[in-house]
Length: 187
Image (cartoon, rainbow, N blue to C red):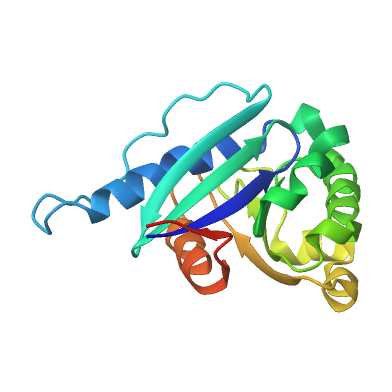
């Protein structure tokens, strides 16, 4: 089975751990018979802030995906983990306008590293369910997303999601399948 190593980054409290829990639920559903599957993910499970590193492995379409989630407080040492990954997922909280600028600066630092130049990148605007949610157009304008996409060496895909409601999870799985290149092959 092919194994893909991914790095999951973003500031504190953007929903990285919830995303992983929701993806675990969705991929577990795929192993059930059609009659046993449920389209409803249920209420969002509780999470606690990640301190340090959280490793989560999912199996989807005969591939094994290992996410290395780094706590937001570890931002200053994220670059120490770039070499071990083939793809990158970066999450922004679209309901916190005051955090967007600093999140963008962190994202640009990640993109500027020589160790991320060949990675596929998924940029997620999370919390579309929040009443304070900024639209993709507003965020794009604020962070000058068009300029980032034009100048970045990486192949960047942008998604809007609500991990609490479960929207966007299937698109994440599709991106994993389409864009992630295997870091190592294991039998």
